[in-house]
Length: 112
Ligand SMILES: [Zn+2]
Picture: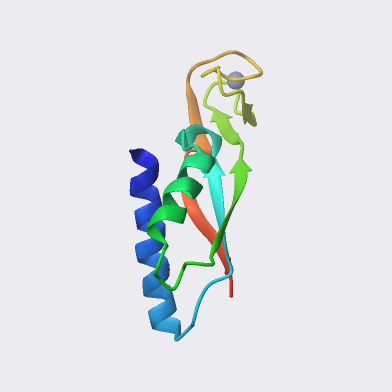
């Protein structure tokens, strides 16, 4: 039910945004989706479509952009992109890595 929780969060924060900015509705919500966040976009849309009914977000469309997992290696000091199935540096195979981006899920921008 992770995705329902996310859909509810989007709805709550966007309704707040509509209120604060005196808008009538929002056309598109662009979301950044880190590959590591394990969120299924289709399920977020499905849940959002159900809960948005009757609200000011009833015609709002969600759009997702995937963000690859970017890491920094603490051993060879290189930066690179991680493949989803691996957890080591793509250059030296060290597991002493830091994730720079790709583990988050957030609202990027809004069209209204
Ligand atoms: Zn490395």
